[in-house]
Image (cartoon, rainbow, N blue to C red; front, side):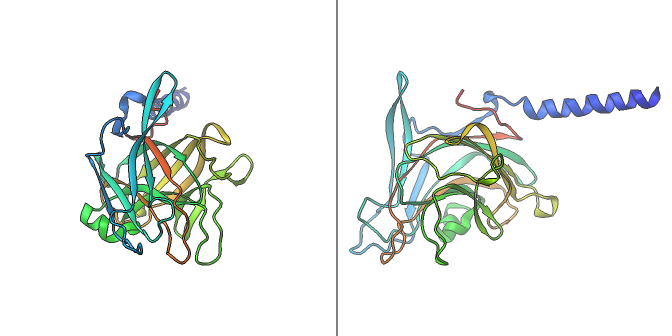
Length: 278
């Protein structure tokens, strides 16, 4: 009887722990930006502007609107430059998080993305560097990183426009674990919900990695699409900025200036797979 009693207590304890993880709701989310106001909290910098003739501040980072049901929704459109302008290699935009993700902490980040057009080359995620160091390091300022591109890599590999994550060996498409295949390319002019659960513990404690969930396109409901993606640099420092970068590619072999739309950026302590917009 004593053994059964202890087993029951263990079971109840485990169930309580599970309910604690799942009980987070939309009220637990902190707003990073929903783009219903200005971009006053954002900084945008072109740190490798190789346009010829020189185009000053070539990146396009603007708030636009769309009709959503009975109301008007605003979102961020980001492009490395207007169509026909090439050579803007690092078009950075970043904003400070409302709460730092301290070393050892786990946070969930939510956002919506929408590909305005291919061809393109976009990366976005979190940084643990100051603005001056973000400007200096650009891509290496990222830790958890998501990527959208159909560009051809220097080794000849052609990306297909699927959402990508960072790995220790480069990048990987997100996965459809049901079909046991890579996820399909993102559809243009389609909103996708994206959750990424960020573990900022030390690498020696199985941290410096993140899991990604997606709803949209081939995923009719919220679906785990990548487990244990890797931080880019693994600095093991507090994550303090949301960062987005895009790139026209070099003048001789441009990637394309297709835009990416961002909306409803939120963060929440712990594992929170609720939808903050509902």
